[in-house]
Length: 102
Image (cartoon, rainbow, N blue to C red; front, side):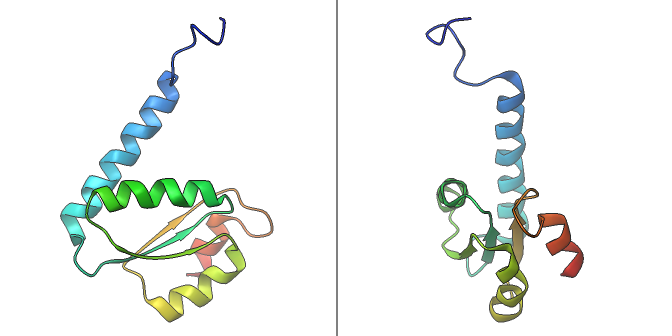
């Protein structure tokens, strides 16, 4: 299929986007935006920016972010976030390893 005819999102990408939107809605319903601190750990700064945009649209304003997974535990201790969003595949330390340590 030529690039001009290719859909903007594949069905898998659309499902992933929809799951993310539902997760954000559940987060909003459970904690509400007022005062909630969200820690975002991803080795890709662009992904952090995109996640923040979605969450900001839902009313969240307090973020702690890092592209270095080795800093996540320190940030959890310092910021006491209400929610931690982790990338699973990161160099050096996976999101699952960070989760296990938390």
